[in-house]
Length: 236
Image (cartoon, rainbow, N blue to C red; front, side):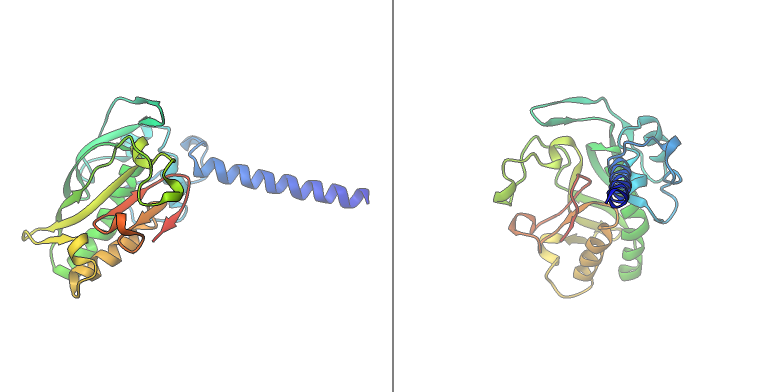
């Protein structure tokens, strides 16, 4: 009986250590110098353990600045806004260019900015070249920071949105080099290349963002993609 109890205790300890390690990596609690994974680089295609390599940017402004470099983005650090009533941010940036496309964002957390840059440069731009023979030059955005609760789902209406910590962004569409507009509201359900582009771009975003929501999630998202890197995971 004692032998069985010791075996159970060892197994429980292993499970606890594994859970603690997973949580530490997921929430960026292990500094890059102690991380088992190589630092993130925006010029490289996504590799294994991407989520953990993005998470480590959460609490490391110096690492953030070493990753968010031109020509991938023109991001620059902004002052923290201490959290009050569930709203505020830390280690956030502002930028007007990401992955070769123009967008005005201020503020957005460092790890979200890196995830957005990777998605645009590694997936959206190649997809646009494949389907349209040209690049995306502008992103339509509906904002990153907003001191508010989650909308569109009554079960979560009393919970602060990731927008309240500048850890989310809403994308409404894309502008191609020839001026063509691709709208999530108008083109998601339409036939043709624009719809294919939007659905494939949405699917590929799920590797970078923990929550990726679009028109098929609910009515509140019929006109945009919602991306965030909060505690939960959802691709819909």
